[in-house]
Length: 190
Image (cartoon, rainbow, N blue to C red; front, side, top):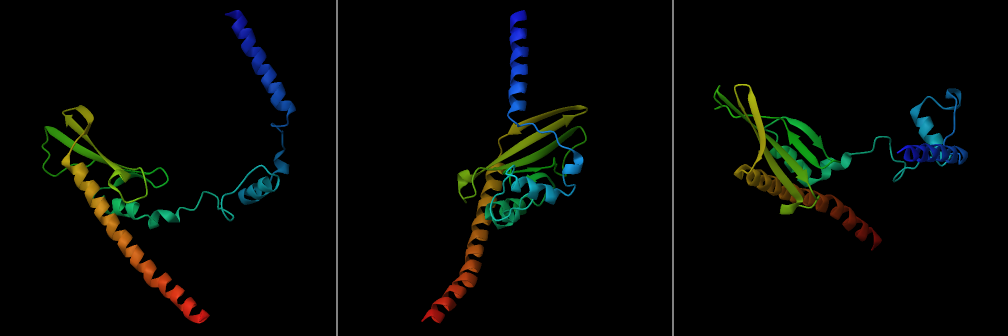
């Protein structure tokens, strides 16, 4: 046991000396580093310590594409009857808050939560997964469980139908705007 501990500490010391001598860790003063974040990012990239995606990507990313995804837009619109706890486009998930129907009794309180997971951006039946969770409270004892319900299928179908309509409308708009531009260019060339 004692030899294992000695071996471990020897390995840690050797690794720290090795990493320090390679120049990975470099002590710096605050006066040497710019205070402005954008200047720091620019300097790090110039020194080869960072990278950017695309043409001058912005800090934090640019998530305008979420509004152009018909599957995502339709899911948000279908679930507009209940407040959302989490709607993460980059994570591919929408989670609603717990909600209940108006006919709950005081002795039993039943609430539902809907989760929509996006597996793909394509409008297909296997592109999303709808899960329903139920929380039943009797007096002060609450139980939460995942349930199978017809509501899962109905929500999934509603999202897919609305996504297909969004895609059709988007294609029609694209055809009208881009198609006219291309037709004008062809006419000018002749």
